[in-house]
Length: 103
Image (cartoon, rainbow, N blue to C red; front, side):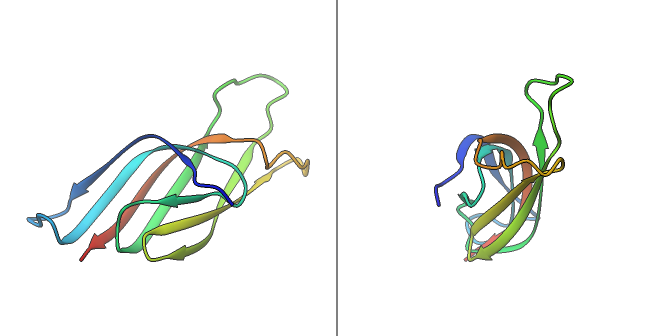
């Protein structure tokens, strides 16, 4: 299991919180199957990730990204190809949004 590579990412305050309180993390990462993402948050309430096709060709298959587990502010991913091939070990770029809090 490896850490996903942060390409971009920021944490924003929700409401009037500075320091502690509700936050939203948004960014893009490179990850492969069983990789993790440390958001820097203490808890995660919800998240959504979508793959980004960086080279769209007729041979590109669609990738599914699943959240396999959440522990504190760390997300573990599971990936799969829609065509059933075993290319999930190849790093993919994904965009994501995570809502959580900082204590």
